[in-house]
Image (cartoon, rainbow, N blue to C red; front, side, top):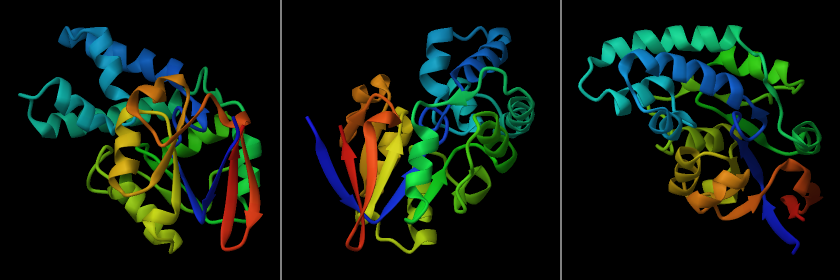
Length: 216
């Protein structure tokens, strides 16, 4: 069934939405978790979509947050250097190209170096407007990042369309008062407004005061 959605701006998550970084994320986070004796499935259920220090705080709630911040800096540097297995989500390059005439921004829990490294590794161009870990005081599922993205683009939240894969990200987009396109089968469990398997299922066409997204 085909759906058409009118919007004025697109806000795009990176990991799991534009870039498939699952291999490196899971490899590095499971290595971090092992000395703490954490259950691997618990780790993988927490880390996607959040900033690293928040994930650490959830999994090790009694630990001094200063340690989390320090270890998160180390993790970000390691992730930036390790792009083995990072690839484009199917259809991402063409989708980004189709958005060039329209307001759009990347909204990611990664910092600028990590965002740049992963987008380059996947052969993708970073949008001109980016909201990264350095830009916000609260990680997804807090809506701050998406609201900031809308503000930077000068578009009302209700006119923005979010593209997300993780539970934390989908919650953040909905909490910002935006419609959310869930990307990837695992997104379905988090009740996005719309759903696609990957970005080959979407097409963008100009419209009066915005664009029309067709999901097919």
